[in-house]
Image 1: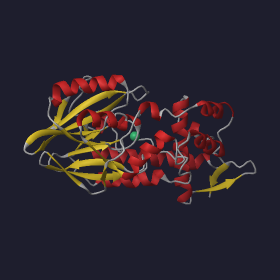
Image 2 (image 1 turned 30 degrees about the horizontal axis):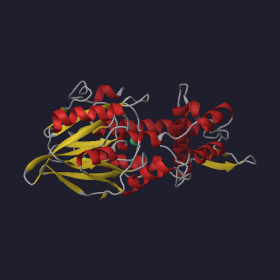
Image 3 (image 1 turned 30 degrees about the vertical axis):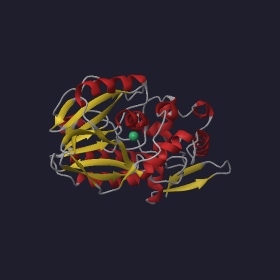
Image 4 (image 1 turned 135 degrees about the vertical axis):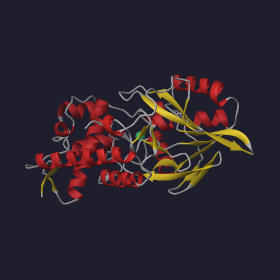
Length: 347
Ligand SMILES: [Zn+2]
């Protein structure tokens, strides 16, 4: 069954660039373009107040380019309309979410609010430190079977993070799981999620019946869940699936505001679909590992389309994430050949 058939989309089209649409009382939706196959990100403006006067809290930024800055200027002129912006909440460090954090803070005087792991990940990504340097990724992929032309493609790839996040603030306010932000008299509870990014903050408002899910729950595509070179033995798919269970506990009528795609109702149904999607992928991988396979060997099983370099990067991380979960669950066992390459076979 396609996602469309069980999810309900209250609004059929996004707001135009530089405009906003009030998707729930006091919750305004803006959309920014992205220069990827995934060509847009949704941002949220929450009506807030400071000292009894109207103000704004913003959620996520868009990428750090002139197009996005220009669209923000339209939003400042029309919707923000001179009211103070007190807070900028960044759900996680990925460039489409964090790109303009520095610029928005300088532009508005807002405070940056985010989780600690995401704050440091943004700085480490910009610096290529803490195991985020791209040569570490290439070495990890090579150890996991990437070779020949595909390896050569990966060796040519460079991190673009610094171009897309041209600056990043030097201080922040820390968000922790279960924290409650008061925005315009309403409580928004922080629900941390794991597996997509180190410590991703989603925001849930019971009063409004709204979940700002960030990248943790998306309506049409499945969230990228990858092993990263600074945590090469990580089991992010287990973390991600456990995190989904937390959102599934929210009321069935919750309106979910995702970072990509359209706002939707049917959170529990969507989570059930995502869990089923991964269960099927895990079963397929288990089946093809009737003889020892590397992560690179199983790419064609997981992704039945030709992958460009950008997609290959995410596909390798995803393949490793699935293999790690199967291994930790005892369904696959790992061996390292004389070539130093890691292979997995049915236990
Ligand atoms: Zn993300």
